[in-house]
Image (tube, rainbow, N blue to C red; front, top):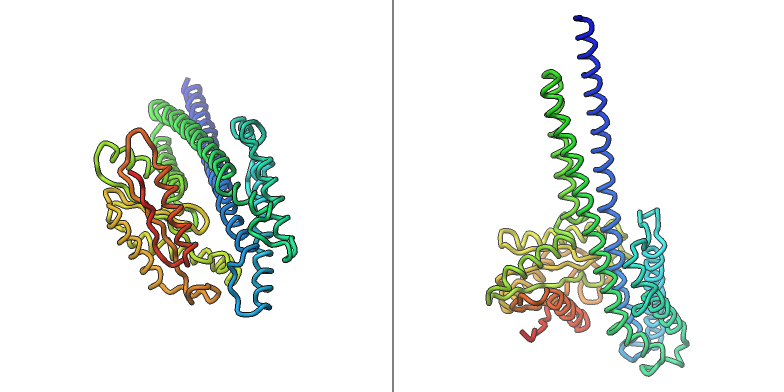
Length: 410
């Protein structure tokens, strides 16, 4: 009888250990899968967002390439600068083509699955958008323009007309559509992963109760330790989903959540909401000069400076993508936002990060675009973000290292 009881206890103990081991493996797999999915989603959103930036940059450089905006001192310098623009155009358009191929077909080296979601496929291949055809046509037109001889350079050039129209019209909206679809797909995936994590956690808790009632204290102690580890892993997961992995400040996803929350809060008041879009001047040149590792350190310093300047103010500094940052200023008027923007610009200059290849300074500078609006309950912050981005474009187009304001209609 006693031997049977010991055997039964041993069996239950081994069963509990086996169940604990199985659940632990499931939890660990869920964690790794969640982290991998988050990285994949972040990479997809970053690459799709980068397409829009490449579109704007290639359009601007195309105009400079065929126009008389270049102002070198000698004819040799003119040829050299035009050749540099040609190389930059070809490099950017190659990157745009590579990014497009990665988004469509996937790339296991950077953990990209490709466009398998039906709604995203419809954007690329179906009416009325046909984004795949538009991007390929745009890439072809830019390449053709970049390879034109100097004798055919003109602002009335057919390729330039197509590029300008695409960069300011239909292609931009199509890229924004696919980015929003990727964002929606990412949010749906996060919801599914959260449900999976909660389900696994519930199963583990049931197992803990079972072991506490039918096994002995060492099992309870083991369960408590396992719970502690799970909480730490969940915290790591939460940080990964909200913070930018390189700079440590808020990422694009958290930025979208924060500005949507503030928009909803202020839409029932007459209090303004301001946003500042920030871009590091000549960051590509910085990377080419000092290397990507130094470029990463530069991004960290800029992010740290922005975050420190906004500390304890209720505002948010986030990495928007690449070398672009965004600052959200709730309860802030336009004049106050301009004051903050000027302070941020001056703070970055005071850090004096060397940049010998910058065209405007011997150290790193930033350009800033400011937009302010009183939120309306029947609209979204998208217009505000676009306006600040346009102001940033104006700041860069006007010489960089300055603040430009976009006057909203409301």
